[in-house]
Image (cartoon, rainbow, N blue to C red; front, side, top):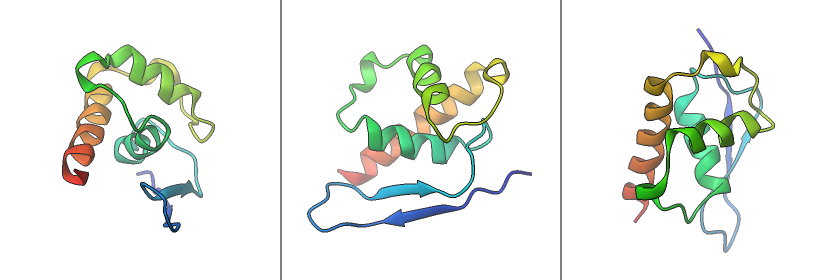
Length: 91
């Protein structure tokens, strides 16, 4: 089991909260990965977003510390779904 500690920082006049990870991200951290990608890419067009792009952006995260070869479509789709749902609920 992986435990993720996420600190949420709200700043005045900031569009969305800033997330700070106190531990590394792994493929099991789909929600935390989605929130970090959301922060880094706030104006994403979900219709044009591919699982390959999610993979590439995830492995580039400085907090990401897992084996890239462990990724699969199910994990990447879970990240996509978490990200998409958070965007819908935020509007």
